[in-house]
Image 1: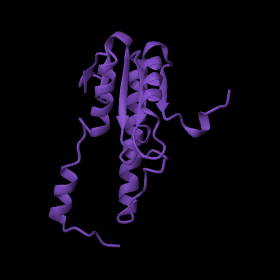
Image 2: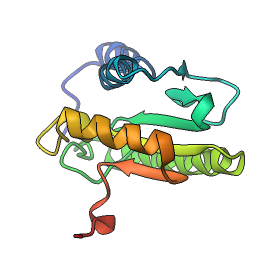
Image 3: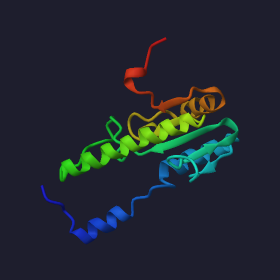
Length: 157
């Protein structure tokens, strides 16, 4: 299947994709701020420039788009065109993410990944429940967590 856009249009579209201040990030920031949490944004001195940095909790939050970070959920679909190129690009994104998270943990930071599908889509976690989960994690959570919790880690208690 060929691209439906010419190269100039495709280039403009790709250039318009944000790397920070995305809608899910802004949504989460607004709610955390309303709960009284204070944070710094995109701290360039930390590996991976985390979306939200909470120095007093020694914690960082990444808000990852399911497509760009290759999350195995209904929001992720590998494009039908240039599949090999996209797959390689997204795999490299994922490997870079994991390396940066490891570096952060080595530096003593706790890492939380909030996937786009936790905020929107049919797997979305209800807002009140999501805010409780994040608040609890910030106050006394583990060194690493993901929301939604990966299917292979969910247990019934």
